[in-house]
Image (cartoon, rainbow over all chains, first blue to last red; front, side, top):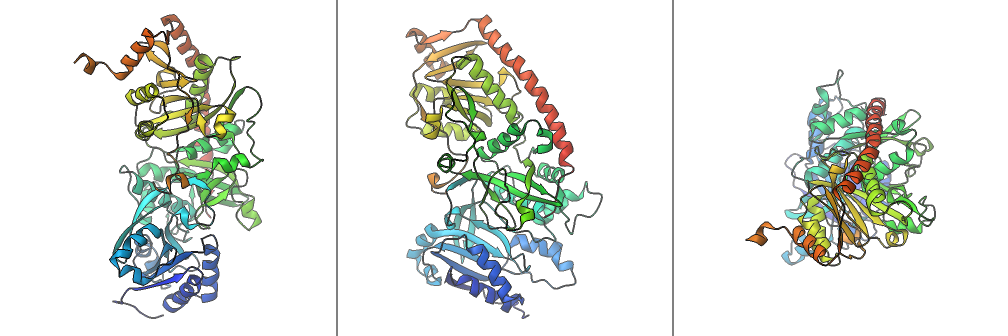
Amino acid sequence: MGTYENEWITLSAFPISQAPRELSQLLLDRFGFPQVSCQNIIDKYFTVLREDISVLIEFPYVDKVFRNSYYHYFSSKHHRYERDSIRLSLFEGHVSEGHFDDPQLLPVLSDSFLGVIIIRPTFPQLFGRTTLSPRAFKWNDFVVCLAKTPCSINGLQLHVAAFPHASQDSEHLTCAETSIWSIMEYFGHKYPDYVPVLPSHIINALSNPAVERVVPSHGLSMSQISFALKQFGFGPRIYSREAFQNKERDFRRILSWYVESGIPVIVALAGTGIGHAVLAIGHENIACVLNNGSNCCDFNVGSGVVDAGDLNKRYIVIDNNYPPYQVCSFDEPAGYYAEQRFKALHIAAFVVPLYPRIYLEPVEAYSLALRVIENVMAPPGDMDQIVTRFFLTSSRSYKSWVLRSTVLQLELKEVLLTISMPKFIWVTEISNSELFMKCRAQGMVIIDATGDASSNSLLFFAYKGSMYLQVNGVYKELKIGFSDFPCYENNLKGEWSEWKT
Amino acid sequence: MENMRKSRIDVIVEACEKSGRAKSYSLEESTRISEAIDDQMRKVRAEVRQLEFASRAAAEKILLTW
């Protein structure tokens, strides 16, 4: 193993087809890792990536996340670990080192940038901090949570919209701590209320209440994950399937509602002797779901209320044993694993990192919306089939969507913009099956997320051309005659937003 | 200045009332609706609290090690 103190940084670009061979050679040369095994690991990871990608390999690279693990854990071991990492920068199409020499080509680099992968000197857990745009993947017919992350490649400031991912190193961080790191990395880059954390911050947050050492990590309980998130500024909520034994539909819906709200959720998968944490960050596109005959939603059967949360849609997950953006169903959440014992895992619980002042539970807010539909807008017997879509969003995003809408009726728009709202609101969009399939709605119920489970939390509701306001304790129905409108989409990003945040 | 004190909602409500597009519920009717909603919500609230406690207790036992 050679030393490379004070060495120059080397940058080499390769088509993705050649990158695994070149990279595994570098891992052998610099770290002494077995080349064939490394190439197999990298090949397996790269199979999900597009074939027209160029990979810029940069060595040595100081990765703040691995360096933190190195100084707090790996450097204290007898076996020698290297402290430098390798950074792979991915670009769409052909890119060479020469692109950086020509200022006129810099915009090309900016447009074609797909993100970075850090290769850690921790064989066989090679893949460290990764921020890859879904654009880099062969299959991306989905909508997910994305955060804009800055990267400086060879002096050039670039940005990528991605969900942060890292494989676990299995010693300092297991799946549980890695999930917490991903959540904080996502929220820290997206909102000023939070800051990204390093592995030692997670360990420290867990150390105080712990009665035993927390390093090397032997995993965490769901309660510990929730505790760590609380320490980092969230007001987390835990939902365990065991508690919902007679309310399985509610458990499924709650997960779906939070994901639809653009909140990444830490999901506990359990099986015989195995407990594993993944993050549910989005779902396949609704068109995909509706074209899939296996969906469980009875959209064409008479009257009643059906919720989009009942759709048997596939979730997009971040699993630290696999490349980002894996796809799975609720009933087979580890279906992408080859090993049977993992395939058999089921969802046992999930933790939701909520903004601390979201007080109203989703089941309460949704029930409140249904009560309004039944008691005011569409009394029983008068009800067509109603399809609801329920989610949480910030009033700022919602009002921005209202303001920009070119199809919302003017009076409806003005009232929505004028109503005083808290930072977060629960929204129930009301459609029928025909409109829902066109992603359109004909009404909405807006509920104060800081409120309680009572009619006091109702902010606004409208349905089939009429809007309802409470003026001095008296309900007023205003027949303003608005027509159906496109469903709100801002919580989850995808092709529709050009993969931008 | 009068318009400054009047929100757009007031203007829209007035316009709807003038053009016969508004239906005002009586105070009794409005109270009855709110009470009906709140009565139904009480049961939901109690169920949700129970689920919260049960979820918290169950979460202690779920270990994530892989």
